[in-house]
Image 1 (cartoon, rainbow, N blue to C red):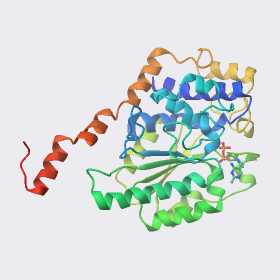
Image 2: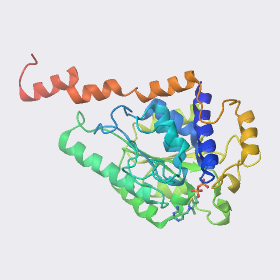
Image 3: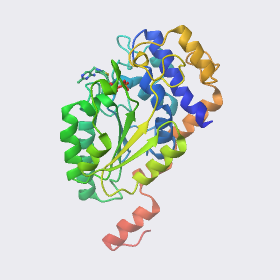
Image 4: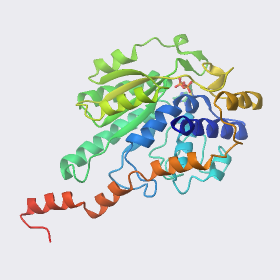
Length: 322
Ligand SMILES: Cc1ncc(C[n+]2csc(CCOP(=O)(O)OP(=O)(O)O)c2C)c(N)n1
């Protein structure tokens, strides 16, 4: 099931880009496992109430991979991210713009697309959380900011200022997942950059680790370890751009163009995903929807006061609960 849930992201992404005849299928296909583990097991959210103030924030700094975010919002059950929106990817008037736009659809926490913008924003998000936490305490404000960055985000100068500040402030609520796929717009990253990103983040005071980003067990273990970090966390996730597309994976050809009908047909075979475009088997969709409502009880408790929270607040005020 876990594999099929990730493949649902891959299929929606390659099919929406193909239908629009424009877009970036490769990064969503490579990141599908990372995103599936994050959204189904770690991210605190309730798709039925996108504005819950104490939700975790998810920022897709690599905004060109927008079909990853749109697929996740659709699969987890955000009401306004219908399958029609996915079919209208990149069309005038749709919520599914080429790059995520804040205000177009619920669940898009901030506009991303200019590389580096999302990681810089995420540091602001994490600072805001720590500030509110200091004012109101853990019962009311205690959430994390997760951000997916690509190689291009880390090449932008603005990322350095953001990384330094986050390390200096020990923003332990910030978790960066780096899509370490060795491929950028024109070919291999080694054409343009040879920075040791782990050393770079470590030098700025971050906890860093390196994992196989296609292995759910390794993703899970790294995210579990990140929960109790005393400083910001960067997880280098080794992925393969265009994973599933036999001839275009691990190549810049999967970065920013539709895969083409022949390659998509081959990818369906490789992924054992025989379903037509935009069709998700009922049991896969239902598993995703369950993940989308995972946070429902926590959200209701937060809104109405869980018995534990109420009793803590009452004992602070010196009153006994009724
Ligand atoms: C500031 C900025 N410069 C250029 C671009 C155009 N652009 C979009 S994606 C991309 C390459 C990103 O490479 P990477 O992060 O490795 O993504 P991947 O190839 O893994 O999808 C570029 C240059 C942009 N979006 N923002």
